[in-house]
Length: 561
View 1 (spheres, rainbow, N blue to C red):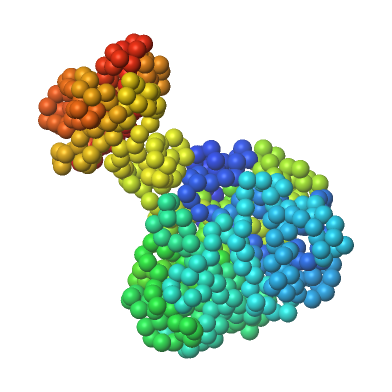
View 2: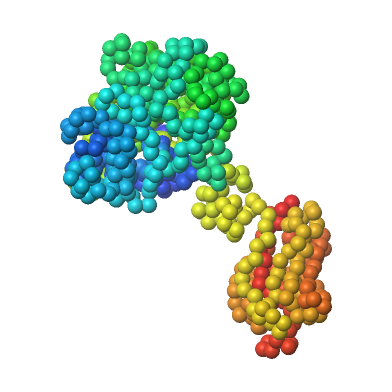
């Protein structure tokens, strides 16, 4: 009863979150994207053998097509898969695919192509067929297997060594010797794979480590012991290997056999996320501490120094539910077997859920599954006996203006980035040229630039123009807006209400300059830190014919304190 009440409350909270979220994530109306492009979506899914070399990779009412359509619907940044490569389990062949074979299969799953495993026919269903602008180019297939299947991580982001041990991926954790709460050993029957991801520095302050596993199945006490032993070893590994046990030293107790040895712990901006089919419903197993408990709480439940988070507290276990029904069932029997854990002192959750097409309303079905031959509602059941679990995490982002939104999202939403360096103009000082200069009586035309700095407090910002007719009279002026309209013998590049500096003369070399006095008219109180203005030189040129006057190109300037 308490479990159902908790799930109902969480379902209401999830629905409120949906109503408050931006349109990109609104399952009610079939929008399954992310609220913020800078959020990082992680999906874990046991695909029940559907990704294997002998499977028919065709459009139709089949598991391969259903899997591709659902991945295209969710568009994860990181996709963690279990139960891959099992031809026997899929009923289409025998044996487990090799690493190389399964890597090729995954590539066909994402990109399509020729199915060399089935008579060189064209693949008929693939992820990018349904989501052409989406990609998962980086693939890690584990060498660990149980004789039946393997684990796979796919990522939008490249794998990169983050801790100095020359490796970016691990098919299983290095062997752990018994220590603290770790009984010793490895990450279980199929290994606990890890991948270190290099996130784009323009958006994120840190990087990401993702781990995934398919722990021992079964309901016996021995099966539970195997799951828990693996989870204890892995939580110890995360705490002492990646996070230094709260110190700056990797493996300070020297109990982890990493060769070559890592040289640095992860920085405070790089979280660890753990995913997988952990084969135990921990909301229904009573007081027993199962693998999910150990992987997110480690030794002491509610502790402050021996938990799975970087700061020694408990990490966060997902509370993913179906958006409408409130169900937490990630397995067809109604059990919750599939989990995601993240270090919430670094990453916080924005959206989370379980994709169950059979529980979606017609209006909530994503476009990518609507064409499924068996009907959109049947897509999840056709794909696998497990359901995809997803979380959208808010990671530490580059946020120069402190508005809580990544700079890259601000720019994508319309914030100016005049020099295209992925930093909003409001956060940096710059002086960049724009618009056109026209020929005058002495050459190709006058060009404007600046010397000194754009710092108001430095008070050394000087406008500079060369290519002006010697001794010609002219003036610098500025305004807020940009335009390019014919004017005189040139182009007017500044519009709106404009302010003029005094008339002055070019020197004998055709150079005109003016140091701006920020305490005097017209600059005082107008050219202030954080403001952006456009500057241009307007000069007389009777010998140039026409209107008898001309203009330089223009300068766009943002001022700093």
